[in-house]
Image (cartoon, rainbow, N blue to C red; front, side, top):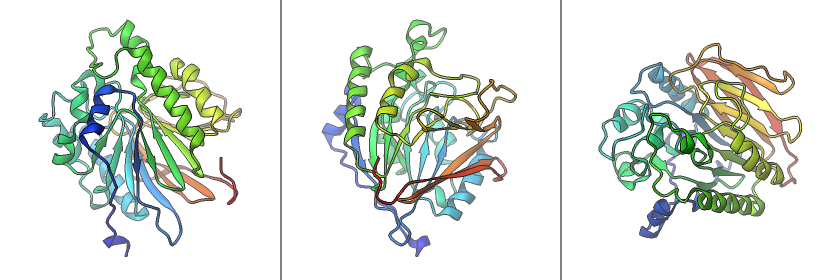
Length: 331
């Protein structure tokens, strides 16, 4: 029965694995249990830019996530980063971990594995605290790494640490301090990460390839396109037939289809504080949704179809679409 199903993820967290956390650009490989055999569907939620101790409608978003999560019988949740505002965690014992995560996402359907990337606000605190296994001891759902791969059989997820790509955090950090432990020297870190990502994508045999990062590649929102990712990351996605790039950073919900590559660019950054009325002009043939309020998204994936839905803070469906593949295709 669905209600009695227990999600167990196989993790090989040895001492060596956590040396990799410190060394930076390693692509750790994780395996998620196979999708439900009856219909071969994989269901999950995506939320980003949420960590505000329940304020700015974070609690209301979490409540609706719980309702939709139960309805879809989700397998896990993806966080697109900026997990703790304004400046990450101060350490593994920072009460913000409970106040913004454990005590907020309390619905039974959300007591599943969370796969989490870091955002720029997370890098302003103790970055290693969020990567520490100590947090998983406090809340078993928590799994945050810099860059990693999750194999869910029909889908393979490639989580990318995007903050170190952005030049201004290094050249003009203003009054912010960033924790670059494990990232420096930066050029070597990025070069190694891109090379490993390209290789992993090339060798993937999954029906669907989804890349997840914090920063936008294409966005009509406040931050707009991230030039560094357009020039360095996007060519790798295009060359390897990636289906979706999923991000946060812009505090909105957004769906853009690139006419050239047909990559679906999905922004789910409405987990708490939103920026109203901050939309840039975009080709209406590509911009399928722009919503400047709080909310989240869901995805339901089978071998032949991927259906994604965006929800507002009241649980209303703002936008829903499906894309399809031939059963014998492997991109």
